[in-house]
Image (cartoon, rainbow, N blue to C red; front, side, top):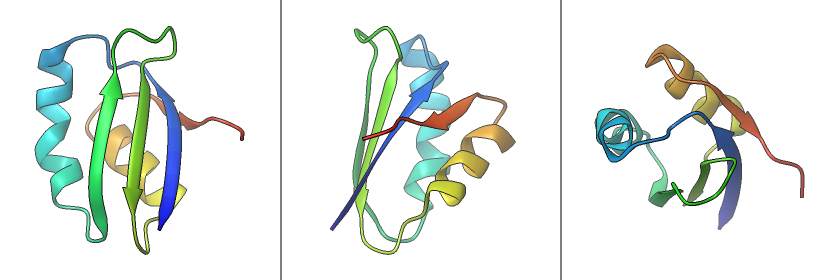
Amino acid sequence: MTILVFKTNLRTRTMVQQISPELNQVQGILRWNVDLQDIDNVLRVEGEGITVNGIVNRLVEAGYRCEELPD
C-alpha cells in the first residue's frame, strides 16, 4: 500500500466536501482524510497504484493548492 501526504489549502469542511467527489473518483484510493487542525491542512491518501502527480493534479484542477510533504 502507498501512503501519500500533502500540504493543502483546504481550510474548512466545505472545502473538503467539494474535493470529495474528485478524490473518490481516483482509481486505487482506498481511503483519504484531511486534518483541518494541522497548520498544513494535511491530506493523507492511502491506496494502490496512486501517484503524487495524480493527486496534485486533481486538487489543482478543482482550484486548490496541493504539494507533497517530504518524508
